[in-house]
Amino acid sequence: MITLHHLEQSRSLRIIWALEELGVEYQIKYYKRLPTMAAPPELKAVHPLGKSPVLTDGDLTIAESAVILEYLQATYDTENKFKPQNPKDLMQYNYWIHYAEGSLMPYLVMTLVMTNMPKHVPFIIRPVAKKISEGVRGGFINPRLKEHTAYLEDYFSKHEFAAGDFSFADIQMSFPVIAMQERTKGNKPQLAAYAQRIQQRPAFSRAKAKSES
Image (cartoon, rainbow, N blue to C red):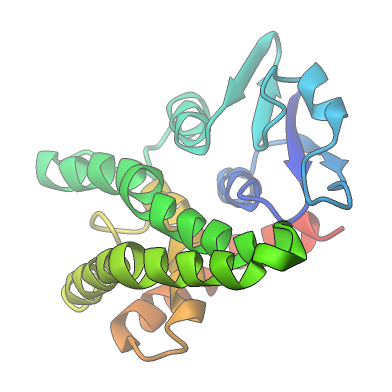
């Protein structure tokens, strides 16, 4: 039996979505975040880093979203519905499934960290911490996020999905794209349209409901 170890408000929604697309039998083990928003220690009994998502299938324990998606596709997508087979689209598939976490998410995470950093320092130095946060975001993070946003806006003005037809690359891209679309407040119409397209899939709606159970 496939078991997804799902931490609330985490990227493991993507794996639930993939499992729903595949139509395979699985179960979800839910974990609540601590008041600090950290993962509970129980997750370390599943994987030493205590991160989510983690998927177990028989005697296999698999971490990292892209690796889990690749495993599910190779093992259960017997008709290759969710991974392109022609070389051009396959190259794009491999690119986007790694771009999501390797290139795009670090800047979104840095934005979150720097935005919240002043709240977690002694009160007396908060003004200084706020200035440092604003400087890092304005001078380093935001210019690069602007480049990525323009890049994605251009790409999805020419492509309906990441790699030909809908694929697991779109599922991998969903987390940062939806976050960026919310961040840009709809000012990037192509990015917004892409985010809407992928979220309109019935499997996404089912996964969203199950992730919040």
